[in-house]
Image (cartoon, rainbow, N blue to C red; front, side, top):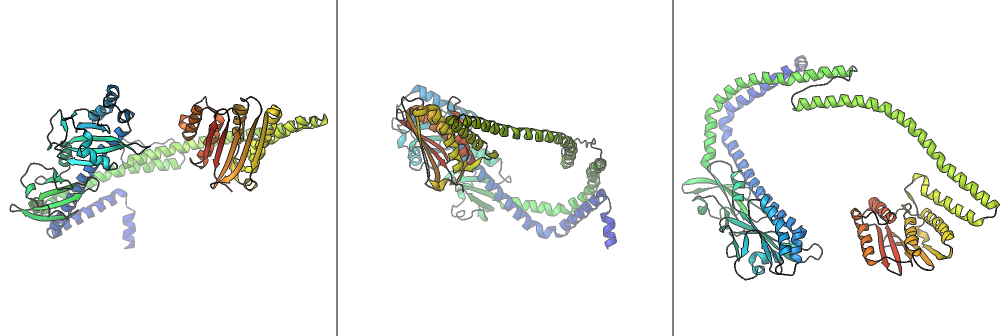
Length: 587
């Protein structure tokens, strides 16, 4: 037995495929001819029932999708600035605003021909529409569709056979030709209702959805709303003989009922989104007819299929195996080191994709060999550059140390002090390439900067540092305080007449590491202050002419730890400015 298995497995792929297909086809043919009469009826019925349920579900899903797309149109219009301007207008008539608001309506009508009309009504009773007009002088805000949308603004509201409305359509659509959708427009910030958008939709839209998916030829599908009113039905005399009690509890199931002497299969799918029910009605004889045809012709078809299939198996097997054999030969050549080989194919099937992948692999291997050589060269050059870069900070330190030594020789204490401060400033700025340093190091860096500025501005500048000692060992992003202090000096103290003072504090507040830079300088005008805080929240709105340092600090904090951290500016023009830094506690 093992010898036979080994002999068969060592045969070519083409021979094995032919044998596999022949066995499968033969087994299928025997099964059909011997067991078909016993299994067809149940299996076909089950398949048809499943297929019918799936199609009904698909139609229901398509209806939900269509209603959802229409709701999205309402949502898009609710966010359109031109329509929002119409909602906020207190005048009953303003031609300029209304003309601007018409434009998005016409755009949606242009690309959605199934829409019979769009009407937008604000809370003042003013309205705009493409083809819909108010009939009487009564306000549209008293309409049933308006009130329901106003009272339940979070929901989309559907209305079948919209009759009795104070609305007329220039195309004179009857209530049997359209259904309506409405939804309230709510202000995002104030949560106040600004008005309601109403859309009339032609029932042909539902008809096309159903007709494109309806199973069978003799059955039909109709839709009812939550009040058991018919939303859509094709013309027939069966639908009105169906008792609603029959279909009350048959969700996703099939029942059989006798109507006018013939058995019909009934199934239903309910939509929680729309509140509608999609009901399928199909004559049972349609399914039985298919089973009879299969029963009579299965034997003949099976025998003919066996002969034809075996011939096709041989033909198609060769078409599959031949390119595989070619690809196998090219792989062996590539294995021997020939990376110039290429698999050429006219088709993009699985074998073609495999061949293209092989071509890509060979090219990538060739490119990688070249890249390795280039990277080795670049690596040696980079190592040289690193060695040179390491010399520069060392040279600066040595030079500053020499200058300090000379200043000490000449008893120039101010020069010694400023050089020591600058050396410390440079050392912490570099910090061996680290982006996260301790609060103590950041404090030393800021003190060194203030020492230099104090020597420069003398009595014009005074400063005070108040840091809680418990926070000194916490970690933070380096160089976030010095730019803010620099901004306070140059845009606050420097612009002020007389002396100025900067107070820097650091503490733990509300489970955050909080720093405050407060100056009694010139301050910031209200308009500019609002613009700065707005740009700190939304970095995309940053203007080039605004200070780069504060936005750089803010972005570094927000990008590293999240949007709830960063800077907040407070200021009174003529009195001074306060900058708050919110940073997470990092141990």
